[in-house]
Image (cartoon, protein in one colour):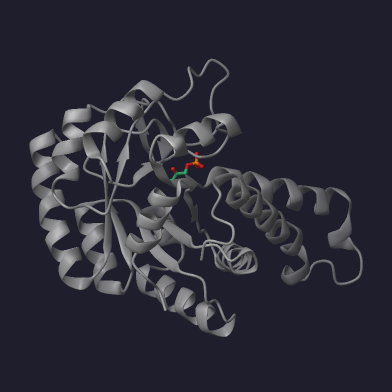
Length: 287
Ligand code: 13P
């Protein structure tokens, strides 16, 4: 059964580790992530962007697929199905479809509007027992066509949003989605420390987990980050393994064209990436 992310993140914050949010794109992705979480006895959050939601034939299809896998694969570790960077309408649609967690990203609105909309969705999520993530300070890079610049959040605005009763808060600290450019300045730990001081026990979320060096990840966790989002890194691992399979001509040998064979190296590569991240984040054995 899907669970809200509240308990797993409260435990993570207290235990000084982070739970990974891995974004899903299709059946292979979902299966690889769930099997790895189970094997490592780790809690996990499956992230779904609105674009990936459309690609996978809508939120109801995804809820059906994930619930089916939890049962058929005997997944017993805590799993939350979470909308990533949701719009107000998207959040409502996911609540309706059976997600167990949502993110409302109002970071592009003026703070008053972000507060008003977040507040409304907090009430709905509380009533239904869902967890809710809010965002302050837009996260750079490109996601679903929206480009941000890697802002650093204002700690006072973070407190305003945290006080609305959200479950977790994403605060921009110079992080961006996708690959980091050569001249990236790194995470702003001063901002993170200031946000953590203002928001206390609130689990903080680090987006753009791809390509952040291990020492920065560890420092971020020590400063209150309890959820780390990873998307691009699984995509790159899948791409590299699939490319290798085809370049080696394996799709031309025997029944190598069978999608179950063609997609297998990519699926294994996703498993290896998820394992590496769970070990780095410290969530192994914490289910
Ligand atoms: P990356 O694609 O950089 O790993 O970021 C994922 C993310 O933050 C999803 O919200």
